[in-house]
Image 1: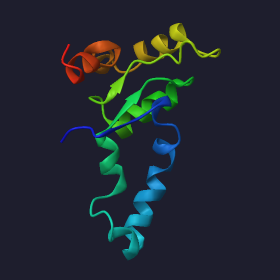
Image 2: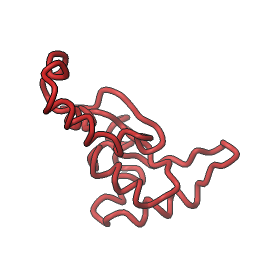
Image 3: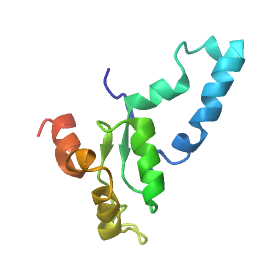
Image 4: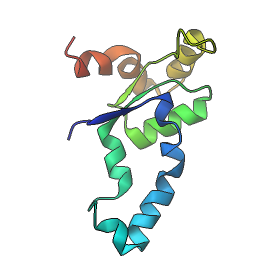
Length: 112
């Protein structure tokens, strides 16, 4: 399976509300008429940037989106961009994921 879309700001609200979406899919037959898989499975098809200002939010994005779809981002040159802080949060992820998020995923995805 490969990613088919992108979500900025570490997925924004998606990682926080996906449990509710999955529950709705489970409980409501109408929700299963359009998609057959749980909504959370589709979130593994999205690329995410690491722009968030809390490490726990970044870890949740990593968990929900998967380690192969998360890439470093800084929100620069936005006036609240935080290149250094975003990189520090990436570096605080589990060591098995840091190299991929720092650039390995982008190199693979963009065939660099």
